[in-house]
Each structure stands twice: as structure tokens, then as C-alpha cells.
Amino acid sequence: MSAMTPQQRRISLDRHLSHGRKVVAAKLAKEWGCAERTIRRDLLRMRDVDKLPIEYDPVEQNWRYTQPVVGIQPTLVSEEDRRALLFSLQASAQLENTPVCEQTRRLYKDLLATLPTEKATQFEQMMGCVRFTGPSVPTIKPEVWAVLLLCLEAHETMHMTYTTGYAGKTTERDVDPYGLLMRDRHWILVAYCHLKEAVLTFALHRIAKASSTDKPFEPPERIMDEYLAEGFEGFVSTGKKAKVVLRIAKDAPPFIADRVWSDKESRTHDRQGRTLVRFVTTASWAVEREVQAANGYVEMLKPADNRSSVRENALAVAAAHR
Image (cartoon, rainbow, N blue to C red; front, top):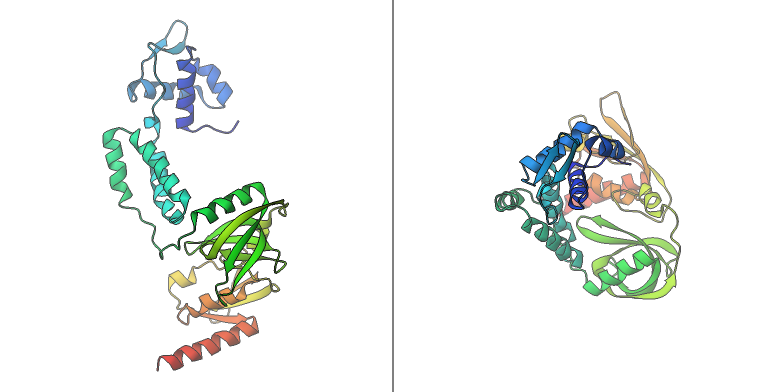
């Protein structure tokens, strides 16, 4: 079995002891795949730190509760677990304006109520030190969110009323939901669109209505992995794959020079010490947008069409700011 965390071990020990069993450290250590001293250390902590009525019988060489214990308290959450809890709680801001956000915060609040007063206070104080920032999150209609999650889980085709982000055109369409992405704190649906006969992305806040068609579908295996592998920061195009070559200036600041453009990128250097970054994507237009934001430190050498587009956009910006 996989290694148990200290918390999991202590909760399991409590279950053994609460059922009137006598714990033999050597036996459990063999069963759980850990050292006998680890079990003894857990038991001593439960007795000395958590103040549980545990007693060791040196004659029978086992441990037992000397009196009934009504369930072990979640105060056994370790310091490391509390820190992880803190960051994940603050990260729930990413779920803002969805029903999941309030559900998540309620669960954390319930757990917080089980901690000792002083630890709960420390936890709340630390919460003010960790923030996740970003633009305001567009509101997603609760009924849309509920239907979408149902269709995702049941692999059912979803009917929706959707308004596009560019032309602003509203259409009725059926989609097979494959998965969800979060991009710039915006929730994006990846789905096969029956209307366009292609895998597309849809902003959840632009879905006005949604309903299940009760028609099952079988999603392609590892579709999300394969879909994202061809994209750029979550953007994917239905066009062909393009070989991208970027040239980063030698004097580029670290936040630009150290940026990872693709998980599968390769890097070399030219004679002037400039960095050449190469990778493949279907969303070269998204790369183009990021190059334009790099303040001239990044040059897009390929594809040629994108290079020309960057130049034209730069001239347009310069003309607008004369």
C-alpha cells in the first residue's frame, strides 16, 4: 500500500483503539509498510501532545485506551497540512462566482471550527498574508454551472445558448463537454461543437442557458492532454501546427529571459548570445500576442505570417501614440 501520512496513521490508530483493540506497534508497522518506531512515535504524540488516554502495557507489549474516546478530533492536522489548507483555501478565489466557491469555503470553515481556538486564530491571521490576485471573475449562472457539471460527469451532450466573444452572435448549439480550463481567472469549456463539427472553447459566462439532451457520448481517450499539448497557455486553434521560432534579446530582463514558452521547447544561442526558442503549436496567434507584450525584447522569427502581423501591429501602435 502507498505510504500513509502522519494524520492518516493517527486516525487509523484511533479507530483501532476505539474499537477496544490493543495495538501492537510491530504488527501494524509491517501491515502499513513503515518502521515500528514510527508507530510508537505516533502513539506517544497522541498521548503526550493530543492528551488522549493511551497506555502502554509492557508485559503484553501493546497499547490501549484506558477510557472511551468519542472520535479523534481533526486537531491532529499537522502544521504542514494546515499550511497546505491555507493556500488551497485562498486559492478558492479562483472559483469565485460559482456555486463551488461557497461550498468550498463552507467546508474549510467547518474544519476551522474543529481546531483549538489559538490555532484557529493563527490560521485566520495567516489567511490575510496569502492572496490570489487577478481581474474580476465573470459571473457564471448557477443553473448553467449545475447542468455543465452534470453533463461532464455523465458524458451527456449539452444544449446551450451561446454568444461568441468576437462577432457577438448568439446561437443555439449542442456540444459534448470534454473538460474545463481556467485561463486568466476565466472558466473555459473545451467541447466538441456539433454546429461547427470541431473541438472548440467556450467562455462559461457567455452561456445564457444550458440543458442536458440525455444523449450519451464517449469522449476520446486523454482528449484534454492531447488538446492542450498542441496549444499555447490553454489557447488552441483548429488550424495546422506551426513551428514557432522566437529570438530573445541578450539584455532581456530575467522575467522575459527565463519564461517557459512551451513544455516541449528547445533552446539554443546564436553568435550574438541571443536565445533562440523553438516549439510547435496550433495557436501561433496567441504567441504573437505575448511577443507584442514583451516590450521589444522578444522577436518572432517564424511563422512568417505572424512575424509580419507583429510588425504591422507595432506600426499601428506607434502611429496611435505619436
